[in-house]
Length: 264
Image (cartoon, rainbow, N blue to C red; front, top):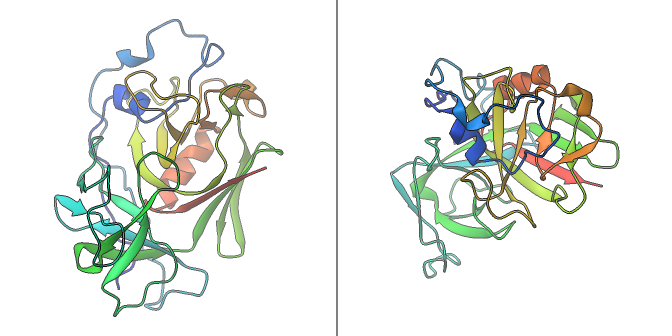
């Protein structure tokens, strides 16, 4: 079992940042420009995963992450089961160009041949089974905790509070979904001072009310903002807006597959 290594963020246009988010709203920006109008690729020098933690043995509070080895990952309805209906094979990398990475349920045994994983598909919290031989297992002790009532995001590493910040959440009619999910994509914007800030962390989570927005499918994300005055309010279409310093900190620390717990 390996430890988190490092990947690189693929080149992306701002349109792809919009594609993973169901986030905008009338109050999102005072800039009348079309937010899909960003041009030029994002530099690929941003590191996607942090340095590996010290020590070879995962601690008791580690969360496990499966990264697909090949270009396609077969998903089944159980160990030695049939192809999972509606999912079948997931592509690697994803449509947005990032590695196919999923949270593993439970603490895997090195000898087991099958793993249950959280899938990056609708409906929310869909799980499936993959062959252990088809994925690389890594781990992290980071957890992102989002308290809807307090409009507060906290990043924990084990029992250490690493950083926190005030967030804007989904407005009436498009609430931010609750539950335990995971980061599954990281996109960097060529307009770091624009609508979505410098980074967007896509989650394995989708809006319950928005099924299409700006060419995307209503995927929920954590992203920056050019309206920090709106933090602490309910103004988005479900996404979690944070300050640009905080989203940059998250992007530089947490690996894909990091658990995200959203609760009242």
